[in-house]
Length: 378
Image 1: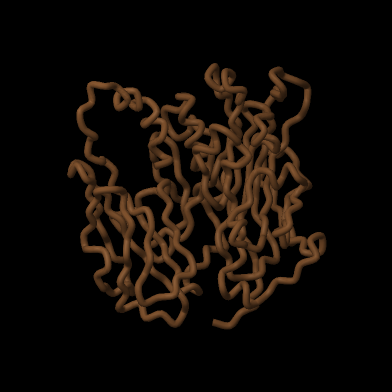
Image 2: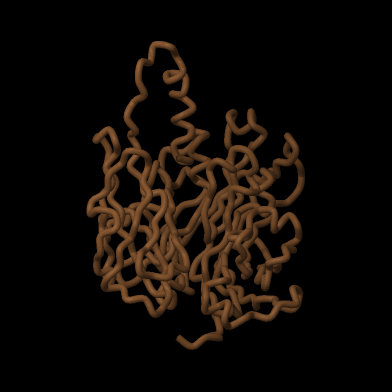
């Protein structure tokens, strides 16, 4: 599994020696796939990097079904890591008007993991449209920010903190490029700082790590080979977005690092939102989008903060989504069927995804909002 690959590389030699007489029992306890008997499944969201939800006392899995599905009698069927067992049993019928918890036990019996399966009709699945950055969990010394409503996590933000953790440069959340800060307009905010990655980063030609936060997923394996592919932008959205607004503070770092040396270039931040149509082959956008000047065949609209400045005070912005540049019409039926995605992306260094930027560049963001238009009737 991806999140364990570094560990597997370290121990691989132990399993390649002639002295091993038999294969060890599997120590993984994961749900790898899920289908639902008696339902038309629209999306399945199993994310191994999603943080533990204390309100559920479990790791959540989200499944979206057709609006006509009866949630009171559904029978999920699970695929598990080899040799693992699940309780309650796969294929048994349960009432999913509330989340149902499952415990997976590894083949060797030494490990278990509890999941909460949340099956919802599509119109209840849409992400929130206001973001105040008030809550975070600490995992492996860094923060994972999330939004919460009605006792449930409604959106988990992604960042590159997991990649920075490999450098060994963080001992507490505020040492990492992205963390929750108590310096918000009211309450907390997200704080992004471009960090030096030290000698290890220099060795692999990745000398800086920009603070970043985005809707989507961070792919750790791609981060080691193609950083632009590591940021998978996008989450399903059922409305037509109109504006992106919010507040920021920004201070550029003193020395801009580029191509192995410090230069007199001035750093700047990045903050934008994208709206695009999903296809079977395009589920996410990635870091190549900005490099290609936000041009992609599936792009529908862009809202980007371009009037950026340094300020010790909160700067308000309100940016309309630009549809004209892409010449696309939003299809109400596709919206209803969950075929469009949205993502908000921010970074303390505009070129941080190419490892160019000024250590110390600091961006704080608070009170974001996406205004939108209903095009569908549920």
